[in-house]
Length: 490
Ligand SMILES: [Zn+2]
Image (tube, rainbow, N blue to C red):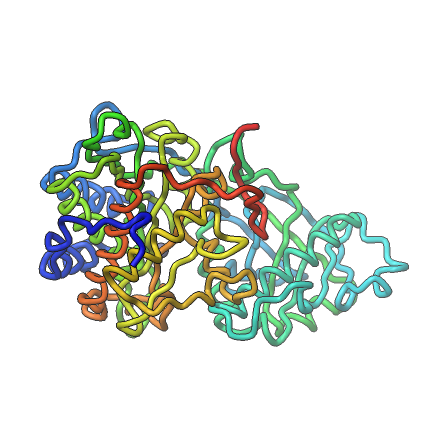
């Protein structure tokens, strides 16, 4: 046993299965309606969390002495009154045709068919002022064979890549006809539902998150059965697309426990999760409430349990608890807080984020940000692994932390914006399962004993971070294999 960073966390017993069970059965109940970001359901869940945090003994750390940090979420979508016809035949929006990017556009153009749009097929065709139709082909970097939602990801990557090439050559509109992969219900059908919702982003000049600035060239994705229609000579495409934009409030719930050491209490260990999920959507097996019990009520209630333990026995450094809003809309709450932290960013010594910690094999778990190129603090990763050795003894599945892993799991939760801002950060997870992002992610499927053990692991790691003399150092030369949307000021 190493004593370099470890000291036994003093209130492990305060993390109790009965509390976790009670809380997750409430937060992920049908009454909470799936906690969709930007809706009253997310606000209701956030108020419940703030109340529980206050009862746990946490102080408010949000705006004006409250537990809340409100921020605006921008949503842009295609309006219902939009119309698209091929020839004289109107197409049903989202059922026959999917508009891949919300743009305002009116065009009436002749259709030219270019096969797969390969360079030799384009060589002698003038695309200017044409609606260019092509068949989808595999994108340059296709998703791995068994990645979740593979058909949809494949189609979206293909459509983006091919449409950009055609727009660059002057196309006035683009029609991409599904190949066999993109025509699948889990690709085209899912795309119709997902893309109808529009896109979500933040209004901020400091990042590429300010979305919606795209050329007004309509990019349409259609079923394979439309191939003969677009190939027929003399066809015209008529498009009248209108967009509407909303600014919604979303919210981060923020609370803290002050540190006991006057010299270090201005430094914080940040416990992170997200309270939102996907709300009420299309039914699967008669159930339309996407409860998000594992994703991410599990960590939301884990943070409450850690808060109770922490309030009983505060650490030397302070603890900051952030329940991020709108993670499911693109990590928006954590991007917002990383750009507008409630305490100085430099005072956050580590971010311990969790997402989905209550499923799969009882004795295994994953820690992401623990190996290069995802690891940004060797010292922090070591503290978490030592805490596991001392307290929880999970077998660690490290394969999901590799840059070659098909899911790119490291990029899919709230530690990422902080890591991009060069704050030492880790991601605790028990990984994917077949109920992920379906109405079947319900509380009765959670392994409460495992959830408690994961909670103790996060708590024990945080305790080490709060107690150790030197704050965990950022590794020099840290650079992720993908580009960050935000970064530290130069
Ligand atoms: Zn999640």
